[in-house]
Length: 458
Image (cartoon, rainbow, N blue to C red; front, side):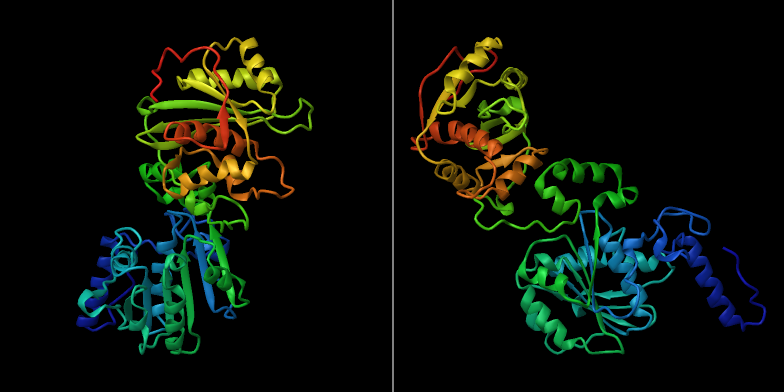
C-alpha cells in the first residue's frame, strides 16, 4: 500500500495518517466491495487479490426498496454481508439497530464472530469499534451508535429510534410479528430508513408476507456459492448433514419449503442422524412392487430401515422402475449389503409373485409377508405418530423419499406413493410389531431363516 505525500500536513496530522496506514497494513486490509460492482463473482482479480463480495452480497440497486432479504443456506456468507453492509450504512446513518434471536446470538454471531462479525469486519479496515455489552450498544469509529436487541424482548424496542435495522435469522424468531411491529414504529430517522434481513428460510406467514411486498428485494444464496470462504472441514460437516435431503433444499440452497395441506408428514417431523450399521439391532428391506412391468408402470418401492435402542432409522431408498427380476436382485443386494434379517413384502399385491421372484433370484433368507387390511392412510398414520414422537430418524441421501412423504396427500389423485409404502412396511415391522400389535397389517408367514450374519432380536 503506497503512502501519499504527507509533507504539507502538520506533525500531529501526519502522525495520525501514518498510524492509520500502518494499522491497515497490519490488519491486511481486504475491502469487501470491489470496483467491478454487482457483476463481480467475488473471486480474486486485479486490485482485489482476495475473496470478496459476490453479486448476491451487494445491496439491491436503486433506492426504491425498503427491505433487503438475504436468504441463504448455512455458511452462505449471510453474516459477513450483514456486517459489511452495516459498516457501509453507518457512514450515513448514525442510529443503527441490530436484532438477533437471543442476546447471546447477537453477541456471538452478529458482533463477535471471529470471521464475519461486526468487530472483525471493522478490523479489516484498520478500524476499531467499542462494544459495551452492559449498555447494549456499539460505538462505531465515526461516532454512529448501533444498539443491540434480543427478539426475546420485543418491548425493549419501544422508544428507540433508528435509521437502519439489521435482523439476523428473523424467520426463526418465535415473536417475530411483535418484534417487527415494535421495530417499525421506531424506524423513522434519516432520509431513507430501511432494513436488512439475513436468514435461513422457513415457510412462516410473516416470512412469506415480507417476500410478497413490492418494496422487498430478495437474494437467495446457496451454501455452495460460499464454499471458497469456508474451511474444508466446516463445509464437509454442513454438506454431509444436509445434501441429498429435502431439508437440504432449505438449509443449503435457501429455498422456502412449503408444507402441503393434507400431507401426513411435515418438514418439521424429519430428523437426521447416522449411527454405525453394526449398532443396529435389526435391519429390514421393504418392497412395494409395481402393479405391472410396462414402461409406464409405477416404480417399485424398495427401502432399507433399521432399529437401535427403540429408534427407527430410514437408511437407504432404492426405489426405481425395475423388471421383476431387477427389483428382486436389487432387494437381495441390499439385504446382503446391510446384513439384514428379513425382507418384508405386501401379500395383497402379488405376495406369492414377490416371494417367487426372490426365490428365483437365489434368495434363501427370511421373507415377512404382510396383508394390508386398511387403506394407505390408515397404515401410514401409526408411523407418522412415531415421527411426531421423535422415534424415527433419516440417514442423509433420502431426498426423493422425503419429497414423497411431505407431498403425498391421501385420497387424492396423486400417484401411488411407492417409496412411502415400502417405508411404512419396514417401520411397521421394526417399530410396531416388535413393540406391540397393530391392525394395519397381519403377518402371514415366513420363508427361509434369518440371515446367519446377524441375530434376530425380537
